[in-house]
Image (cartoon, rainbow, N blue to C red):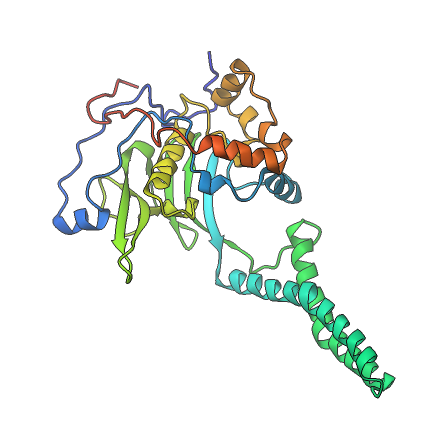
Length: 322
């Protein structure tokens, strides 16, 4: 029997839940904005969006987790999605420019100096020294300090700049079953997972090509801010968006193991349902982190096939008393 002490009474369980209240009647505008009918609820299968997990590779994820001393945005308790604030983004782009100067401009500068010495014998040594001095003082040194501090702070060797604060957008809690939306790091709302519906919204571009978005919308309140799920993938294939919804349901469902993805590799032994499943099926504890990048690409090919969602469940008439 699985130890469920880790899960709160509000945690989602697709095998044991109470019937939900009927969906309220929505106006024409709301239906249009939500894209019509929601995607079905299901007892999620093992399918995951391949476009989401193909980058970064398991080796890159492992290195990032090591650099962050084990901290990650997704574990057995909660998935937290956010981004840098405005000043953090500006600083990030500055560091990328600084890195570009170091990685690309320095070799080009050295090559130019060598070619100049070979081609033009009239160049004076003092002129070359002055040019090198100016470059080091105004290009190499500032770029090196900016990029170096960014790398050192990212690895925990130096304190992170005060303005590099993350802006939290939303969280999914497997442990409590709650979904929470934030704005400017302040909670906008928080509700139980089965009170939400997932809408796949399409809209034509200027060229007439359909683009898609995936939104989680609270069924009983008309909040202005939905929960955008399309950021989990760079794909524009509708089936990939359905796989995102399937993956989220799988993660939140405490009656099933968590999605088998590299990002959750280290968290699997700490989740009781997942740990029991892994033991029963003799899954390697370090399956993702033990394969090389070539084997990883082969594993991705195997994941591309299969139904995008599991068998449907009826939240309104199929529930049992939890």
